[in-house]
Image 1 (tube, one colour):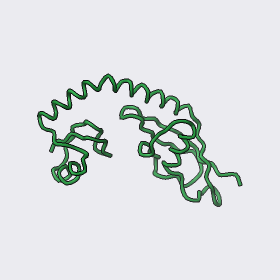
Image 2 (spheres, rainbow, N blue to C red):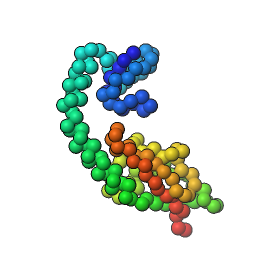
Image 3 (cartoon, rainbow, N blue to C red):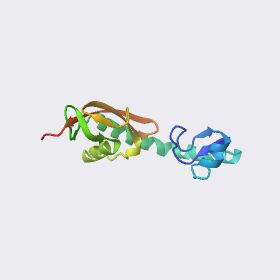
Image 4 (cartoon, helix red, strand yellow):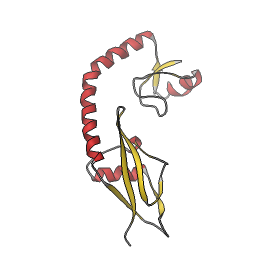
Length: 150
């Protein structure tokens, strides 16, 4: 079953992509949730025309996302967290903490566009995260978790 995505769907595709999925997944989840529509011939023609018109606007968005990516690459982020014995944290450092730390630096990034390699952080030390600012602009962002001074 061919569908046109209305929104970004994790592990499937981005908005306005034409994807092929199993019938049940499309009929029972994607279409009722409003995440996709049937990819009929007329819908594909409308999509192609919309993409042509949006291409110029898209270039400006990509340029601004690239500027933000370059600014984020220049940051050296240290997140402080309470620790117990050794380097083990009380709780963990998550994408929400990383998003808040970036906001303090002046870069608003939604937490759903950040992924920390290995999930959440439970020990001090250097880590890496991926920040997706646009479907074509992804930044590898190194950060460090340090112990809070007692």
